[in-house]
Image 1 (tube, one colour):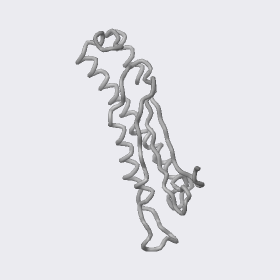
Image 2 (tube, helix red, strand yellow; image 1 turned 30 degrees about the vertical axis):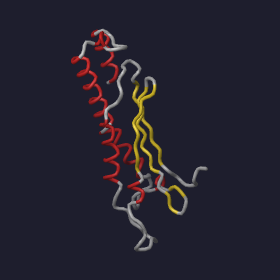
Image 3 (tube, helix red, strand yellow; image 1 turned 180 degrees about the vertical axis):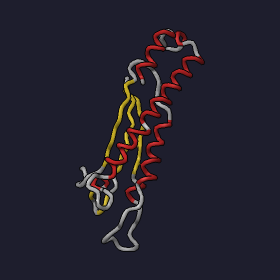
Image 4 (tube, helix red, strand yellow; image 1 turned 135 degrees about the horizontal axis):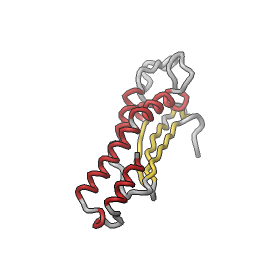
Length: 151
């Protein structure tokens, strides 16, 4: 049964229909970025001995590829008194939830970098091996078209 409140679950996908390649571990940089920014909270009304950094430590990520799509999912299911709350967290005086602020930064700074890293890895793989000999591989000309579409 789902817990009441607001947790956070963000998924972004990259179309990989023209290449047969799994993502690298570079996407986990996003998780480290979010955790590094998920600090500095005011704990008004919380007893001095109450746990701190619970929602920061609750961030998790998974990277998977299914068929022709690669997905990165960032999740925070921190609970307090049985209710999710990370989806409501915002900075003092701000109206925008903090996860939305951080996700905009991730989209602007990290996702383009991941696409570049993925493209570089695909190109490195194609140079290192003859694509015609890779199971499911394509000709060099088709590979060049494929890598341009990833951008």
